Length: 487
Image (cartoon, rainbow, N blue to C red; front, side, top):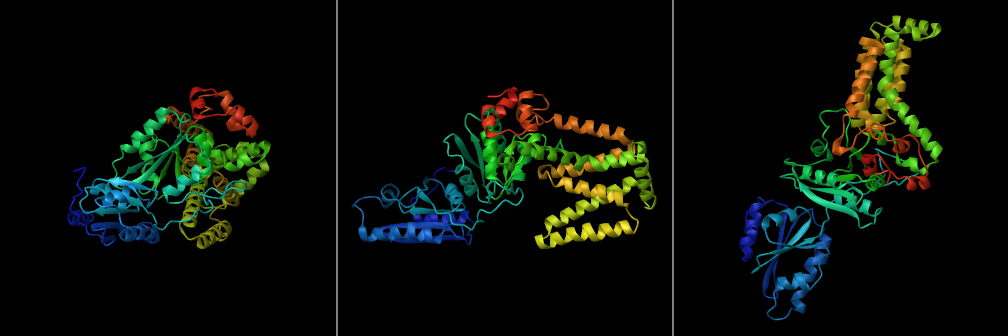
């Protein structure tokens, strides 16, 4: 590819530009003779602001005809070196670069007799405004969330971290899409090997398009296809991104996605929210333990119920055992089959409520939870105690949305293990999950740290919430977790 393929003949340059862009209908070219020299302004309809293009470029250029420039001066040199048009200005020497900038919201000025062009940033494409977070709502914290525009997302983070050590590096990923991918980290906080490894992995992506953050996750997460859990977490909250950046993490924002990827993440971080930092330490600690209990209920409660009822009925009191036995005798299916059937039905309802419009989705939840559940009990298809177990499990599964996907799969595995082998099967399944999660050590950071390997000083940060006064004295960062000690 010729690095300098802009011809000094303006007609040839414009003709070649139209050819490379397959004569797309979006390409707008405005040409005129100014001060005896012919220039042309190219832009892509819908990607630039028409008002800014008129006010910042076309009008000042037309006024040059009246004011004039010094005799013998180059019009292109005067435009690029003597007047201000826009703050974002780049000199372009190839049509490939010019085409890429055109599709990124730039207007490109070509001049007859010049083998270069001037690109002016005039982005004006439609974008969604900053709104309240929907997936991660909070009570006392900020109420803004990321949008689909990478530049807006970068500004949301920069407004909170005004330090010059915050590095924002933009790379373009995707052979066809040329998607802007921003890598954020704080210099001297994020380990250099993690930053280098992340940048290398992104540069090695050979996909044709990069539409969402999910396209990049398999390339940066070593355990993506080997574990139920992920070392990368998604968030739509700029304040959470800032918190993790201060702890030495690396953040990836993909243009077109209102979620940021934070890596590497820890298992314990799935049980904390930004509201924890806005409440009393004793209450935040209490809620954190509630989240831990909710996770174990969401994953193991149905399987434990099946294991005890089918294989270890002696653990129940006589009165409770008689009630459970009478309820199960009235149903036509084995207990394990009932639980699996209800769990699958619950996942169907949740998926339907998620994919349908909000108004219809809430109606699906009401119909599924009240009418169908009540009718199933009255008709004798399922027992009432089992419906209570499923209700508690379903409620607990909503407490930790970051672990929703692994919880859904693990729940079925524990039901099968408890149904076939009782408590022994539950113990074997728990041991297998523990081994799987402890084996995750992406970026030389154990996913279960600081619990395994055990770092007692850092373990207090995940079991108990401290005040900011104590937090600043014993601040835990990624480097301290890797080394097993505080800063």
